[in-house]
Length: 89
Image (cartoon, one colour):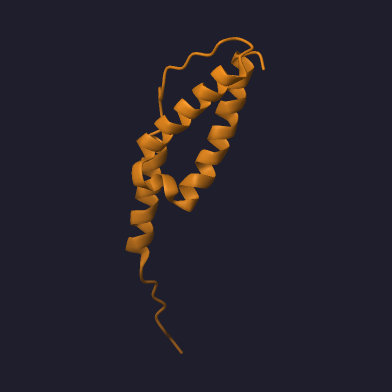
């Protein structure tokens, strides 16, 4: 017995992957120039908030996509730690 197996809907998957690829590519390179005052928690918090806002701005509507959010969450965690370290906190 012969039969044909067919998969439909890959065009939607391809579009989604292209959107995700574009979202990640939008974060490549310089995102923001930040400054922190050494030892100042409020300064570090403000710098982190600025960075997060710039990331959201670059991502546009894809910032709420669950796959993008999962990837960006890790980036934010690393960036926040680096900002706090730069501030000596």
